[in-house]
Amino acid sequence: MIEENLVRILFERALKITTAESCTGGMIASTLVNVAGVSDVFESGYITYSEEAKMHVLGVKQETLDKYTVYSEEVAREMAEGAARAAGADAALSVTGIAGPDGGTPDFPVGLCYIGCYYDGETVVERHVFEGDRQQIRTAITEAAIRLAIKVME
Image 1 (tube, rainbow, N blue to C red):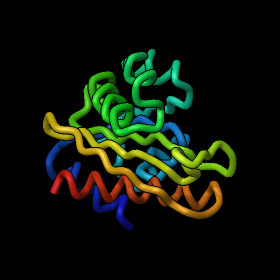
Image 2: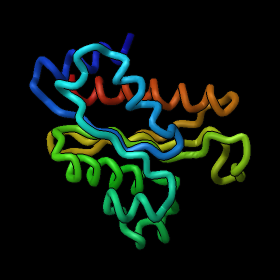
Image 3: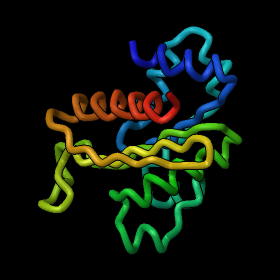
Image 4: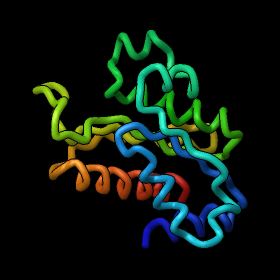
């Protein structure tokens, strides 16, 4: 399973990871904690569903939300960097998007998400649009986030 690969990489490099999740509601953290021994590399995760939580917990700027919207590369970047800072972690995964089935628009369709990965002073953000029901979209985002972390850290 891919989460075991990520935990192995973190363990071998003595790194700590944190998560900042919106549309996945803790699913990334939950998936990671399925791996035995994950407590050596994962101490905390943040579920910041509202814009207010993103600002107060992670330090996402109001100006960023106003200029780019909550569904943006810029917000995913600030979420990942803020989570790493708040947790004192070496790496962080962030997700912001629309899991549906409601809330989509032509510019921001259901399934849209931005996944951020902070590691080694850099943040990589990917944009995805997944299809399916709410659970399928959240699962796809979770898997894509873990794959992004592995790609960034390898």
